[in-house]
Picture 1 (cartoon, rainbow, N blue to C red):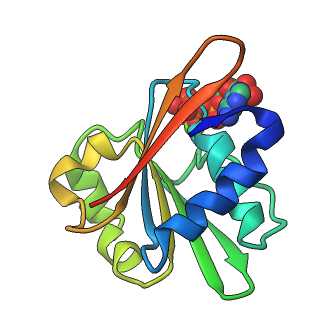
Picture 2 (cartoon, rainbow, N blue to C red; picture 1 turned 135 degrees about the vertical axis):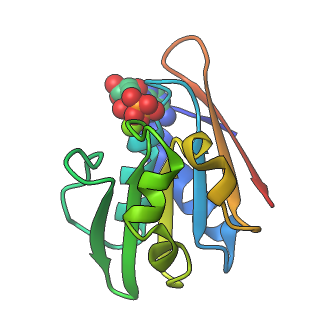
Length: 135
Ligand SMILES: Nc1ncnc2c1ncn2[C@@H]1O[C@H](COP(=O)(O)OP(=O)(O)OP(=O)(O)O)[C@@H](O)[C@H]1O
Ligand SMILES: [Mg+2]
């Protein structure tokens, strides 16, 4: 689907609907593609009004939603996958809560078997092509 900032809330709602029971979302796309921006829209569609920004000091941020929690990861600065093991990534991934993961490429060996894959591509005129597939 094609998305702009004007339509991102609708995009977010369709993604949540398409995901069904799948709560682990991987976000692929170059720097500035719009991963964090889409995560913000998804979080607000899920009912949090917390301030969403990429985790900086820690690797993961936690937001409360009416039905539980959202864990938002940004693995961009990860140097080795061991750092993810050390922060206890498994407790989050297998918690049953939503996990939104930026830069999953950095933890390629630690990914769960099933997830929703989201690819964001930059098009002309501030548009984005967003492609989702369930794996
Ligand atoms: N769907 C969209 N349509 C148009 N512009 C967008 C869209 N999503 C994001 N942008 C714009 O792209 C810019 C970068 O977005 P964002 O910070 O979300 O990227 P990112 O993929 O998280 O980058 P990084 O890899 O650095 O974390 C922002 O200025 C934002 O306004
Ligand atoms: Mg980001």
